[in-house]
Structures are given as C-alpha cells and as structure tokens.
Image 1 (spheres, rainbow, N blue to C red):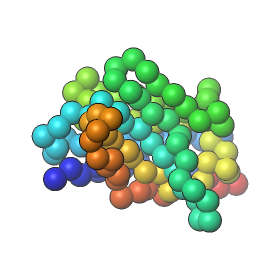
Image 2: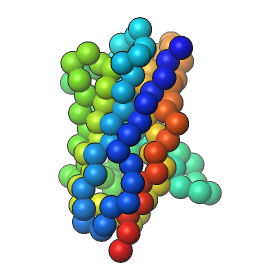
Image 3: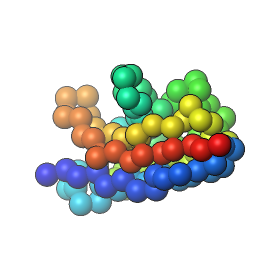
Length: 117
C-alpha cells in the first residue's frame, strides 16, 4: 500500500513563503514522477509543479519564478518551496506520485494553503 504523507500547509501572508513536503518513505517503490497539484472549490485540479526522473521539472505558468520543486535522490520525497505567494495560490495542495507510465496514480490526502491579506 502506498501512502503519500503531506505536511507544511497553513496560513501565510501575501508575499510570504511556505514549504510543502510529501513523504512516501513507507512505500516499497521509487517514483519516477512526483509533484504537486492544487484545487479550489468549483474548479478542476491543476498541475502546479512536477518532476520526471532526475532531470525534468515543469511548472504551471502562474508559479514560474516563485515556486521551486525539489526531490530526494531516493525518489520517495518531494518538496515545494513557495515564495512570493499570492491570494490566488490559496487552494488545497495534493501530492502526486507515479512509478511509470503504466502504473497507478497515487495521491496524498491534501493540505490547505491559505494566503491572507
């Protein structure tokens, strides 16, 4: 059974910083793909940042230059450093992991990030 344990969400002021962590250390698998999605009520879940293998990272246009995704060498942990946050970054953030193209998608339970004035 794969469990993605998220931490680091909370209340952050506009322009502030926050770090989200996702830990899949309890899994017997390494994950080639790990990243973060976010969702607000009434909207579809959207990709925030994702890492593929050890060399490819992609970001949603709205977070480029502000958010940084990183992962551990063991390919079981992923982090999202959020800087210069804006009110529109308020959402529930979900960790995502996938071993390979043909493997299932795994999701964390979600962590709320609220950017306040």
